[in-house]
Amino acid sequence: MRDALQAIVTRDAERYPAIPGRLLYVLAPGIDVEVAAGASDRATGEPLTPGRRFRIASVTKPFVAATALRLREEGLLDVDESVERLVAPGTVTLLRAGGYDPGAITTRHLLTHTSGVYDFTADAYGPMTDDGFMAAIRADPGRRWTREEQLRFGIDHGRPYGAPGSVFAYSDTGANLVGEIVERLTGRTLGAAMRELVGFERLGLRHTYHESVEPEPPDLPPVAGQYEGDFDIWRYDASADLWGGGGLVSTCRDLARFFRGLLRGEVFREASTLELMCTLPGAPPIDPDDDDAAAEAANTGMFLFRRRDGHHETWGHSGYWGTVAATCPALDATVVAQDGQAWTPDGYRKGDVVGEVLDLLEGRHRSRNGVG
Image 1: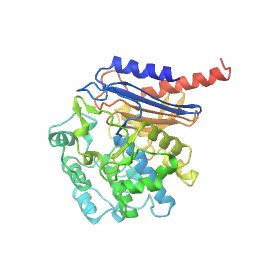
Image 2: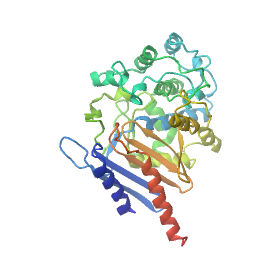
Image 3: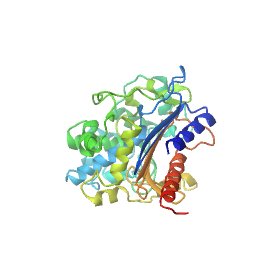
């Protein structure tokens, strides 16, 4: 299996030179393997090696959702209560100024991307504009952003996508609001709340931390290079993507253990909580003519996406700076990959590696059991 996985990352690194390097980790019965290919540092050509840490960007969101749902299990959060009663008064004022009704928006809406709240990072997923957030952080990479400043940026640069519950639109702003709710309910930083409520130590997460908020864990592995084109994203202050939409640094190993534990029901106390997280509300996308958006809308749970690769069903999430993580419950298999590139080349889809690996695992299982 190691040789087959190594061939995949070597092939991709050679076929797509825009991708600096490739990490691939597989955790399944009898398999616990990470491989690497390519470079970690484009300038020096330093080889990428297994075990490195990286900014996981939006793959943080399932951790945030799991934390919020643990608060629900503790009786501290009603996901159908209006955010007007859960966020700070200043946040309520900002939302109203932006044309939103915070009394109608619930945590459930935020967790399922159906709140209608404009995404302050919208230009990361479409054409970059001169006045968009990506241009703002590129112009001043060292700026320390607050959650309030990012909410205000979204209000100043966009309008509501629609009434709460009426439309699907991916929103980092909404995720940041969930982060605020978690902090206010726990009286702790988001990082500390995630660590305790998700159970990092119990799940075996050794190198996952909320960057610049929590102390760094001991014995950290070196970083893996991550880029937007040729721009080194480690030049960005962590606060560019920190307050709920992103913010965690992790490794492939840790992410595999989180997603396996999550889908095995090891994070929550009640099976019904995982069922709730995997419920698909099915609100229509803001662009009904966009087939990709419609597929995303139809397969979105609470900060968790269902994906079908052939006959394989997986649950997971991807991150802007090159990360994808997914678990296939039927095979008890988790695949985590990191390619270090936000701007992927034509013909390359970072999530396709999940289906490719699952096909390998299924073939291995069938061969061992004598199935033709």
